[in-house]
Image (cartoon, rainbow over all chains, first blue to last red; front, side):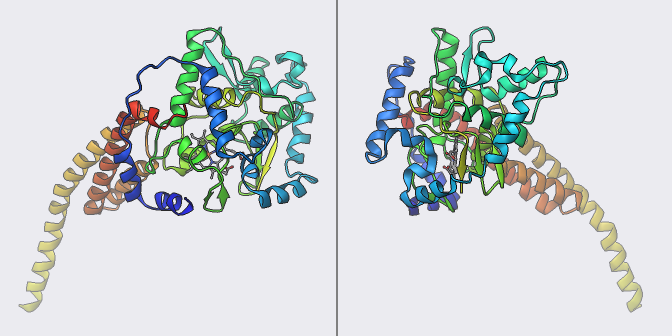
Length: 287
Length: 102
């Protein structure tokens, strides 16, 4: 398996063969049924990794490898995201120039609500992620938006995730054809092959979790967003969900989309919904 | 006599070179335009490849340096990559379903 993956990664020839083999399969009924999708998605991972406790899937690569998990648990005594967490807490409490705070923009003052993001906004007709909601809050209060891939956004979401740790992911899909379309679009984005490597998100995070790709162990797609944002040694800093999507696209030699583009918002909606019931574990730390 | 002959050759070659370049520059421009059109189509399908973008940049760089042979080769590579990405995006409109967990 390991050899197969590196072979595919290393050679365009192999990728092209995979390309040719990916013949379209005709699927008869295309009714959108998110609940059934989530059930199938979770069952797939529960059966593929019968020894992994269900709530452990949210710990990304650590759920796949005992040695790595031990090292991580030792590290958690002095977590590398602590700095971001403190910064985020302070930013969250600091009033904008108009005297209001982030708390004024969110239900329950923004505390313990991470598990409800992203949500489908029936007024806008689109998916709203936590990162997007934070920047909209800033702009509504006369502040410039933050970069979606940099430290400030990661600090804010780290703090909000921390106040929600342990709460089960709880994403709703309202009875609205546009919400179902967004879910379906996110699903399509997740399974669609792209880039010169001809990989979809699923090629790595469904077909190969636990396998090594260069120095890294691939996280399973189930619960893959529950630990966001994450500290990565490789980044020597924190990364938002947006940053992770951009990095994963580039790895397959696909030009990444703009952070918070419709596709990224929708794939976040899809991945979060199918992780319903699994606990928020963010912020996370990765080797 | 020997000397003037050499000079004549040198002269001829400096005259000949720009005209040879002019011909290849037009070829380059055509090759680049085709590559750029294909890459725009791929981007419109939200499926641009990083290697297409790099090959286009390499073509421009070689052309700026007057190396039109390399520029044309890079432009042709860019076009082939862009066309492969368009093919991929077109195929995947249905093919993604084969990977779905059901």
